[in-house]
Image (cartoon, rainbow, N blue to C red; front, side, top):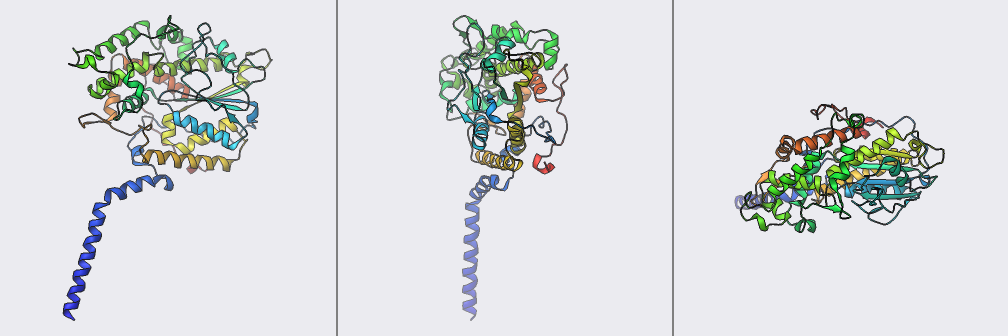
Length: 452
């Protein structure tokens, strides 16, 4: 009996040891599975918990009475830029097509990206139709606002358009761009052949600065209307960006051997602060192959001018003022990262009003939140928020340090700070015209917890 008891104890100890060993071996797998399942439970993936946004989303309260909207009477246009929501724009488009009779054109863009008519300086060949929803990346709105309004309405007398403008804080946009394009292995092949310091000209004659400066140099009554006391940029700023770009790119005085590197090599092997600086300059001044930081600011100003100056004017000779025919909602990708549920509700309220039920909006918002969390937990390469920058030597750089570098940069700090104030104004933040200001402390409760 004693021998049998001892044998049982030995077997029990062995079994417990095996269970413990199995647990240790699979601990990382268990943690990974837990993160993968976060979207099912509605909890926030750990990567997003590390993001620590500079500003919370502007609170949104569902109106007591939403407008009665017939979606078939409207054009819907979702505008985004590089790193402000490529995948998000497709999701928003699908929300509408899956819940209404609207269709999309089946194309990547409504018209050519980063391109315009040589003479009007508006997008070329715009032909958008009612009861359709379009997605457009990086449009060139360099024309006067009266011409732009007519182009957005496709020169049709009965057309109305709802524009959803997806923007982003320029500092987080710049860091996301650097993180994404310096990743290994390479995600987008164009970084292998890009020439970030090349002087690009549209049609061989129009430079990017000369297209932007008429907007950026406007008088104080215009700049003041978007949160600025002074011009967003001066002509000499573009020259300084070019000089700094050449100092960083293929310059053996800066880094021995780098004269043979391509753009991607620079992003990978320069000091991370220099790599970020080079990538951000490319995002500001390469008009044909980049430049979206400044393009975004330009287009915000143009759309706001339409809202402020043409609201009561007749756009196309119909007797109906522009303010009733062109509606714009500006939303930040940073907000969708913080609160995918609440921002989806906000988008659906603007786009569709009472055309679909509150319950259907809630179901759409819940599904989007789940799918977004799944992408984050699964390591989707397009999602960089909350990720540290890793150098080829395995060093990890905190994004907060990179943002501090940008904000303290003599030129980029001022330019991106001005863009930030334009973005903040469009999003509805209180803007201090004298400077960017610190984050407003406010607790924002997710919409579903407010009982909306």
